Image (cartoon, rainbow, N blue to C red; front, side, top):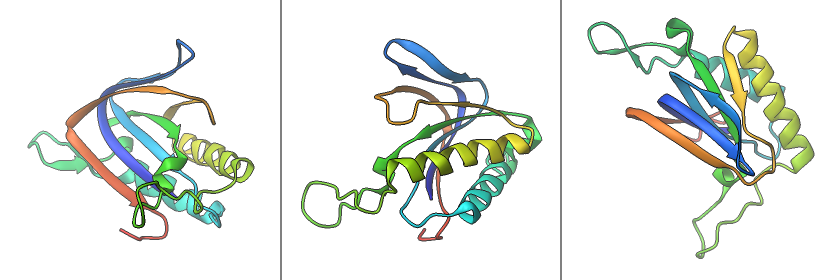
Amino acid sequence: MRAVVQRVNHSSVIVEGQVVGEIGKGLNVLLGVEEGDTPQDVSYMAEKIVNLRIFEDHEEKMNLSLLDIKGELLCISQFTLLGDCRKGRRPNFMAAAKPDHANSLYEAFVSEVERFGIHVQKGQFQAHMIVDIQNDGPVTVMVDSRKNF
């Protein structure tokens, strides 16, 4: 699993002109599921992301997590995160999981984050989405369950 995690003041996702998910202060997570990912990847990613210390404390140091600030999370499924651009000019998406498997683990990730007591909103799987991200900082980090980076 691969995620782009952004600290946000506000984030929303629109499908066919309708807001389907919207949060205030928290994290916008773009989540890609890779072929071969398992429930262990889901657990690792959920625990890692909700505990990332990327929110500022009273001394303006990044010492607080999503749990600490009682923030929200907007999760957007994004298979293009698995695009391999090393050869040629068109990304190769062969590493992305098939839709049924990807959706199952995407939903499992959302459920796992909710178990931490986090309010989660989501995009719509396999839909064309417009994502509005008000990145705070900007702070953007990448997390990979296979620890490729």
